[in-house]
Length: 392
Image (cartoon, rainbow, N blue to C red):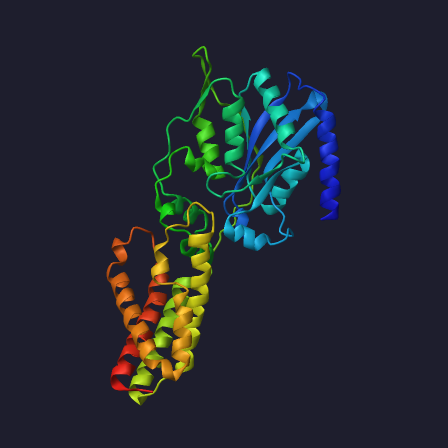
């Protein structure tokens, strides 16, 4: 981190000096699209950056709105709450390209067809944005990220209107991100768990630009109409800066769906054994409902406390909620048997309705949720049976 701070200070000084120089006629402004890789969770969506290249002034800078710091206090809490602060970072083009070449990502450059005045205005805006007092912004995955910020700058400083022609087929936000995570079923499972029904809304063509690959395709077909009514292509030239390494990715064999069904079968066998022996493994239900309650607390926080725009409402709160923690206490203490029966009766009825109406719930539900819902449904059903048959 100390080295990072030194480099940032050096780059800010360099930019301050560069800001005193106007761009030459040779200057070019490009949008760089780095293709997704399976290296890290945050690399599966790809990345967008802005390149300012001016050989006459020895400028070749990358402006990157995707910088974040894991070491900041309460990073995980703030990320969960939707208060993640990203910042505009700068580096030289060579270092940026090498990083993505080492990652094996394809890198595409689209040189934007700008007038000299548009280039200069955009360059000055980036310099202002990169100042320490301006560079931090409140990140939002869908609506304010490394891809949407460059778009906003282009639309602001182009003297005219940007027309995104031939829009792509309609897709929901969830369909778009689930395609990105298709080789990572556990990541898809987590996203489907945390993101509520707003994620199943059809994204407008402009909203689809939050993903770098969608932005690249949109820019290819876009045009600029100036105040005089003259139309010109938005992209003057397209270059492949790094070919990328396309290695076949095999999803892990142990998927959430497989794990869920294995656990479901295990619970079925345990429950059948209890029925046969007329016994009850109290600790099993304590663990199951306590675990579901903890997960429910996290989901409750995301749904009702977080400021993320796509987490409320979340219909999974019907199944996964903090009240399961109360159930674990009622189950643990024998004298609360009647209260536990009432809880199981209500839970069994609610989960029955959920399973019967699975296809009618206005939210995409990952199929891996079915065996997990089924586990609590079975245990609540057995809890009702025990109370009626006085099985202790």
